[in-house]
Amino acid sequence: MSYSRKEANSNKDTKNEKKKLAGKAKEKKRVGEKHFREIIDKFSKVKVMIIGDFISDVYIYGKPFKLSREAPVLVVRHERETIVPGGAGNAANNLGSLGCKVYALGILGNDLLGNTIVKELTEKNENVDGLVRSHIVNTTSKTRIMAGDDHTSKQQVIRIDRRNEEPLPARLRAKIHDSFTKVSKDMDAIIVSDYGYGVISPRIITDLASLAQHKTVVVDSRYQLMRFRGVTAVTPNESEAERATRIRMVGDKDVKRAAGLLKKKLALKAVLITRGNRGMSLLEETAEISHIPIVGHDDITDVTGAGDTVATVFTLALAAGASFYDSACLANYAAGIVVMKSGTAVVTRNELLEAVKKNHA
Image 1: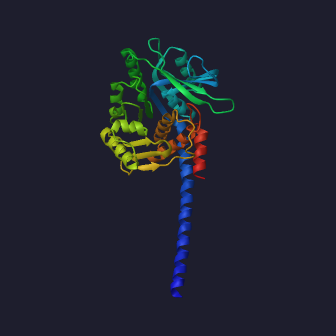
Image 2: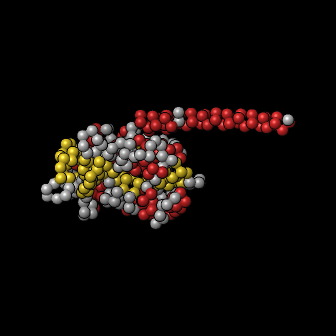
Image 3: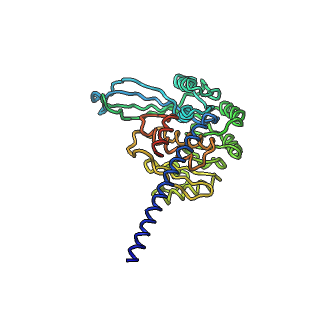
């Protein structure tokens, strides 16, 4: 009988402990939501430079209606087309949508595509004084043919890329470096959006390491990640991290090894690796690696530009005073929003606030 009483008391204590833990968990969630809202509220006070490769994303929409007599291919009847900023332009658009002060720095052709990008960024009150338009180069573009029947989602059929095959002229790169040197000292944070088209010169890479000693510098680089030693953080996806470290990403252990190697070789404070429907992995300066699961559905609509959004929100949150982990969580929320949109998309401040509320309700 006495054993049963002890057992009953033990069960009662366990239940009480569970209630306390549940209460603490709810309290943490409430504090978390408030904390994230405070971070987002500070976005409007932050000044961010986005430097890199500005790309024109062209979407041509149409309806497939027959097979060609000339070749075994579908013929798509043209319906409409749109031009939106891609690459560094997409990052700039995300920054503008989140309410911060944006300074855009890059090179465009003095052509229809380049002028369209400048016009759109200007309409969103972004500072485009650093966007050099030249008759010597053409605006880099990615044209996607989107086909589908009426009342269905258009699917990408083919993508056509146009780029300058010759290296960018030295005088244009020198002009970018001069603007970078003058403006960077007044920025709270710098985002590097490097798609390998030549805007990020060795001189700029050297300067970034010096700037990172007293401000946030985050690099999103496709092909030369290992050159950015001494910046604050890098945000590669798995394939980019694989290419840079030569470590094949099979599981969490491989991700940890790759992140550790990047952090050590580049003398970083943090490495954030995006992993598609497996979320993100963050390695900080003095902490174990954190695996952050995706939010929302894993049935992704379109990943175009998601990496730009992650780098943007991660940097903006850091500049607003958030920790690396909290910044990664906000970037994860933002990624969950944009991958459910079709095409090159941005996340708005209200959407991010709603995602925070939903995940901390």
